[in-house]
Image (cartoon, rainbow, N blue to C red; front, top):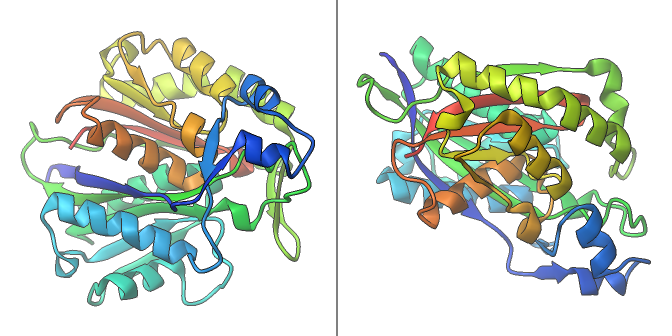
Length: 315
C-alpha cells in the first residue's frame, strides 16, 4: 500500500440558529462588538435531546453515503471530541452502534480544537501500517453544553456541529492522498484554553492564544506544506481551525497561500472545536469551491496549545 486518501466528507449542524442579536438578550454584547472582535454572525446550537454522538453519526452517515460505502465497510472509527460527558462507552463506540458498524476498532481522540487533524493522521498511520483498511474519522463537539452563558467573552464564540471523512487505502499515487502530519504542543501553556470543573466549563486566555497563533503558527503551517511537497502558493484551499476570523485571515496571508480559497465558516458556525475543520472542509467540497485532487491544507490548533496539520488532496 502506498498510502491513504479521503474518499468523501460530510457534515451536520443542528437546526437551531443563535444570532448575535439573540445573544444580546442574554449578555451585555452586540452584533458590532462580536463581529469586530471575532467575526461571528451566527452559530448552531443543539438541544438537550441531541447528544454529541448523534451529531457525529449524522455527519458520518453523509460521508459514507457520499463515498458509496456501507457501515460494514468500516473497520476503524475515530471520533475527535472534548465534550463527551460520559467516560464509557466512548463516543466512537456510540457512533458505531448508531450506524450499525460491526466490530470496528473504536477510539476517541481528545486534542480539543486540533482533534480532527490528529485523528486524521492516526487513521492515515493505521491504514499505512495495514491495521485498518477503511476508517471513519469524525470531529464532533457540543460546545454549548460546556459554555458559560453568563460570560460574554466566551459564550459568543461557541457553536455545535460535526464533520466526518471516510479514509481508505490507496495504491495509486495519482489518487487524492493524505500528506505527512506536522504535530506538536506547548504543554506549559495548557492553561490558555480549558474545559474544566464540575460541571465542565470552557474558558480561555484570548490574548495569549491570539499572540501564539498569529506569531508561531505561520511557520508551522509552511512546514506542513513542505512535508507534503507543496509550496503554499500551490494550495487550492486553506482550512484552519475556525476559532476567530481575526486569526484566520492574517494567518492565511502569513502562510503565503496567495492562490487559495480560505475557509471562513466561523462566520456562520462559530467555534465548533474539533468539528470546525471537517465542517468547513465539507462545506467547501459541497459548494464546489474545491475540485477533486486539489491540494488543501488542514491545520488545527487550540486546546493544550496543541497543533496538527497536513495537506490532503480533495476527494
